[in-house]
Structures are given as C-alpha cells and as structure tokens.
Image 1 (cartoon, helix red, strand yellow):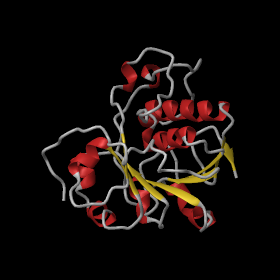
Image 2: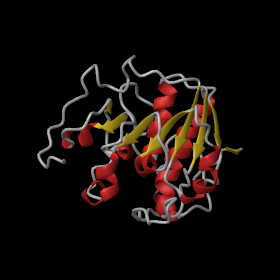
Image 3: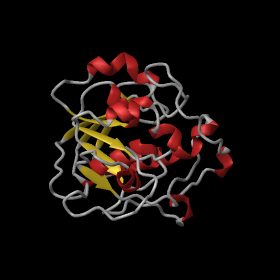
Image 4: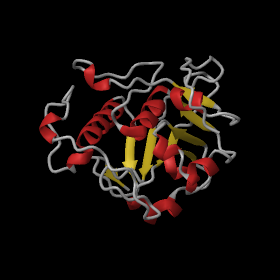
Amino acid sequence: MLDPEVVIPRPNQQQDIFSKRLVLPDEVYILGSGINGRAYHDCIPDECYLISLNRAICITPCSLWMQKTTDPSYISEPWFTEALKCPDPKAFGWELTSRVRNVNIAYTFWHEPDYWKEPSPFDFIYGLLREGGTIAGMALQLCYWKGVKRVVLCGIDMKGHTHWDEQGGSVRGTVPLNECLDYNADKVIDGIDQEWGRELQMLQLMVDMCKASGMTIQSLSETALEVERL
C-alpha cells in the first residue's frame, strides 16, 4: 500500500486543495483525536461540514479527512490501513500522497517543514499550508483561505498524549518554553505542557490570526488553546 520510493510532485491543478473544486461552507467543525473530545462527539451535528484530523477519521464519517504525517510507525498501524479504505474524501500532504498507492485521494496540499527558520513576522502563504501548529493549524489555514466564517473545534486538546479511545498518541519531543519561537507574539504562553510548547504557541498564533480576520473560533471540548468554550 505504501511505496518506499518517494517522488515529490507539486499537486496538479485538479488535485490541489486550493483549487476552486473544494468549497467550504460558512461553518466548519474540526475534529481531533484528543481524549477531551470524547464526551462531546455526539454534540457534533450530523449535517455539519466536518474535517477529521489524523486518527479522528475512526470516530465518525466526515466531509474531509486531513492527514500529513509519513512517520513509518504511524502509517503502518492497522487503523491507518483500514482508514484508507473509507469512502470519505481524503486530503493528504504531498509526501504522504506520493507514498500511497491504489487509494483515491481527492486533494493534496503542499507544506514546508522548516517553518522555524523563517524570520519574524510569521504569515500565512497562499498555495501552501504552514507547518508548526499541528494538522489542526493546517485545517484552520484551509478554512481561512476558503472564507469560512465560524470554526468549532472538538478534541484539539494540545496537551497530554491520550486519544479518545484511551490509546496513547505519539510523545512529542520536549521543547523548553524559553526556546519556543515568538514570531509576531509578544509573549510566550505560560503554564503549558513543555512537550506541546512549540506546537501550542504556533497554533495559538494561527488561531489569533484567523480571529483577527473576522473568523469566530470556538471549542466544544477543553483545550489548552485560548478560545471560547461552547
């Protein structure tokens, strides 16, 4: 299913997630794998436009499944192989797309790995989804570029390592808070899990940038992000 020989093409115009073929509604729900979301899965309306991230594809049918990582220990897990068979439209990062064979992938997105090497100020770039704020940050950027007015999060814990099914997630490398990058922000977020420090700060920055553009961002479940709880 996965080809070890990787060729890195830019997405063709038909498959590019930025193409006009993908239209998002004014309101979008984004579902992550965090255990805090488990009590709120039933609160997600059946008729909503739902973007499921990574392993959250296993929770409920969705409108779009976004996945980027090509970590061999991750994509070799049985759930991933089974998830590839689901009919839900798939939006994969360019490297993952190049590894997957015999799978219908609706959309591909370009992303750049060395986000921390760019000098301040950080900004969104049309045509690619910036890394650094986890796959949730990429989903938010997609909503930003597609003109979404309201985003509701669920299971975007940004702390801990346990999924909704009580299986452990990947443990992130520890990044001391004083080494977290500060870009546009004038302060480092205090009192957060050091292992999520860099990702949380970047995702919070992306949240704030989306909110500054007029987007409303709320969360059904508890999160380390500074967003309104529903």
